[in-house]
Image (cartoon, rainbow, N blue to C red; front, side):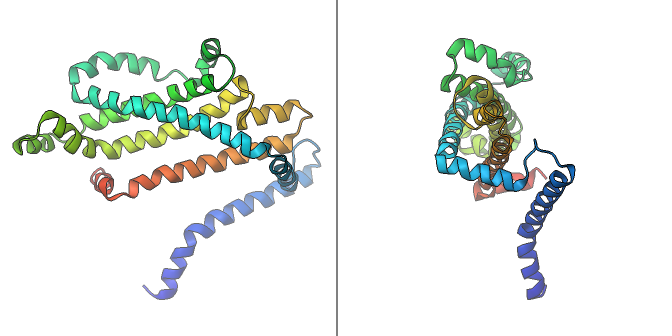
Length: 261
């Protein structure tokens, strides 16, 4: 491979996504101008609205509120879900008992829990955190449980042959072997958590990016702010996904992804 070809390949992963975004912005501006709409904002209107939010300080405060709720709910789901999944996967009898309940509750949309959350915790942070926890818990516990169950039996036998205790076998052999599948569940759960917190804020909160969308719609029909909040939600979701995907590049888990291909 020549030096020119290597350079081309380095810039291509960044160039093409940016080119697609630029094309979408141009198409968006052309459609708004061609349609003559006075309701849906143009890219320049959204940019000006975003600048207003930054100047007022609302943007940073609402972003911080949404991220704080996600961090607390998701973090609690990780703290509860991973140990629960490890135990249910390690003890098959316990897994068989708990699995029907998990599979019954898991398909219920977290949005359906919003009225229950408001009744239990009122309007505010606790209701949103509770919904994020529910949305994150089930993907985490199921992926962890299945990850433990899918660990090849030869790994367990090898650990026993080396004289490892059950606790050492779980922590030093089973957990690292199940980690790649657990990371998939953590990534899915984080995406769902971010989606749910925005929906919860649109109904049961007085701050956050979800609240910004509803408030902008109701207070003067500021659709430029609505679209600005939507774009920001997407960008933050992309950033969160990129961050958690970096864990897949760690040496301790890369082998697991190769083995499953």
